Image 1 (cartoon, rainbow, N blue to C red):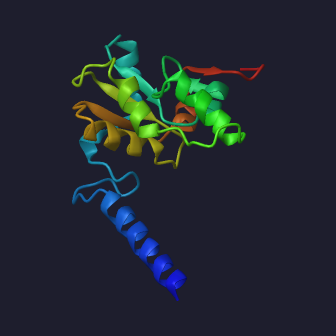
Image 2: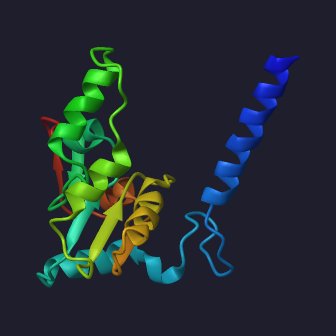
Image 3: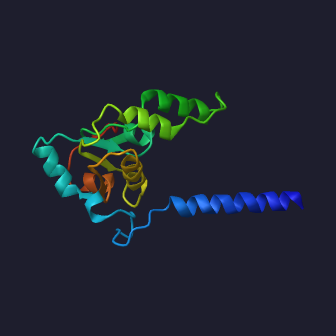
Length: 167
């Protein structure tokens, strides 16, 4: 009986965390959960690149996805040490899960809080929206998520860096 009570307590706490972690906005984009001013189109992002505007482009996907294909000029948001620790954990070589939020906060310190930042992920993915919301929590004021995602960017013929031999 104690197990059932403990399980229900964990379940209730988990549901509360999920509920309170969800952003609540009235004028949000239904897919990403972001306000319109928190979204940037591919066309506008490409114009920023062509205009040599100063901004940071973050790839919100995994390191493996980034290594395979990423938008020209994009960087990963976390430190190289984080990705190494994550890989060691994944292979069971270390028992402690690396602290993603702590590493993100430390890695982003090199950018001023008012630096324009754009993030992207895959089409039909919410990782860039999650990253934008986290950066806003950290106090960054000019962060936006590109929609749709890298597959649409590539289809549009915009520049990417690919590890594929025939790209």
